[in-house]
Image 1 (cartoon, rainbow, N blue to C red):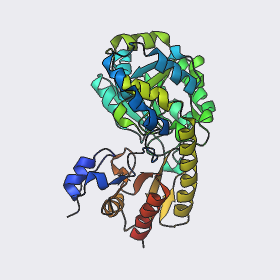
Image 2: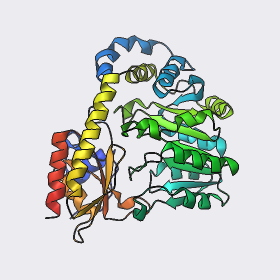
Image 3: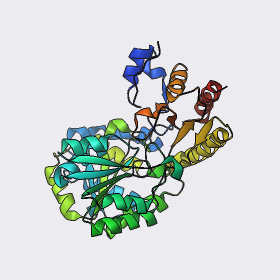
Image 4: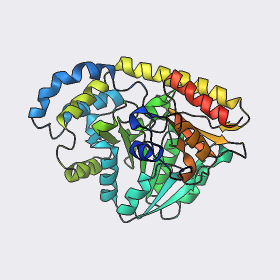
Length: 364
């Protein structure tokens, strides 16, 4: 029988148990991680810093924050680091205690979980297929008028791969400022966009104190195991409180050093952007020609696809792919999506071709 369970990109152990496939043999198109692996420079140099574990890290992580400052183009005083962006989300929610959060979805489920754990309620503003999952600012602000104190945006959004450009983000911030609404923006995937400088809201933190931006190294730098995240915010009172509540040394010495190495590896970053840009255009171009699929324009390193064939579901696509040791994301568990949607990220060309063969074969 075909398993009915839904799997997250990190659920390789579950898949191993259900399908009898070794997790080492699975190519995960669901995890959205850079297919190049970790930074070239990091591989060559990190072992030379092994003695760093004999000392405590700097409690302020000043060197790391200055490196992130150079990478992002903001003052290092506006940066706080944490044990992955998940820790920073938790701290932010604990401090701000939102009573009612509005989450733009479909999106990552962790936001709702954290708000709930902080005692707040979450409501969703739905991105619609009719608008190609692009955010309509006027409709959003209508929803924001109802006692919302926190707005949560993922930009680019997961799983829709849609973006909010900076001009539109400024409009949202202006409205939220008037309504005393704080805005949390998750920019996990912004480095994968064609023109990240037009998407990132980091420059806006110089002018707005009601926005906090989260980023990490899990996806673009392919290092989820290092658990290094950072937030950028112009509200120094909020940053001070985050630092006071945060446990000391939540980032180990090697992770801090690795961050400094990765954020300066220009060759790696250029290779990543070139690969994703080329494969994004190539793969989507092929699927767009097939009448069985609707491809929503992707801006990140993954694409949301709708199945137009009445006889095929997202579960069918998942099952067919995993039996070839390829894992896609069945999106039927996301709010506002059905069993006609699936998502996959762009990997190396030869792996992308293998997945394409499976996807195209299932609708024949």
